[in-house]
Amino acid sequence: MGSRASARASARPGARHEHGAAWNEPPPHILSQLSTVASRRYLVITMMVSGALLWLAAGNGMPLRRWVIVLGVIALSLVPAVNRVLAAALDRIRHPSQRTAEWAGVLIGVAAGGYLIATAFNQGRDLFPKTEDDLQLRHRHADAGRGHLWMPQHPLADFFESFT
View 1: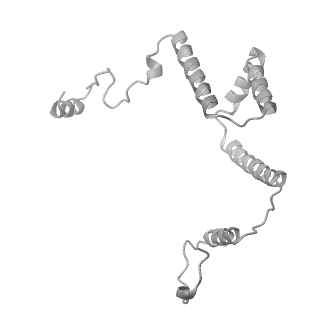
View 2: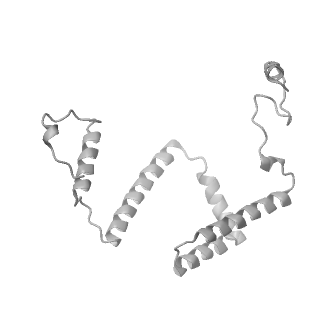
View 3: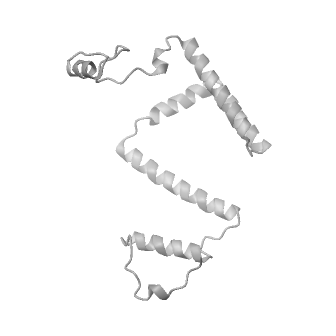
């Protein structure tokens, strides 16, 4: 169809795309065109295997202990009883109330902060700025927190030296 014909077709109520959907509907997704469960399962397995091969080809730095944990969790989730329990738990939290969502955000924030602090201690890092760049970043964040997105130029800025 030319551009005029497609413009006329889109203006008419009930006009349809070549694939059969109405003009105001999105085109059908490829997974919805796969009619049988077996073909969908084949597609998912193919995508998982190709993703795993690409991941292995790119290399990974996971030690053996993590591999054992990951494979153990996968094997445990394949047990039907465990799978049903996990699915039921996910169904319960799929549509939380406003209060539950707020508490979840607070708990996730506290857990993330604790994780970052524990990781810093585990890596032997200090929790204070030590270099000029760290101090500059800290001051810049403090200024931004007070609403100063930029500061006026210093009157003697031309005479300052640079680290570069």
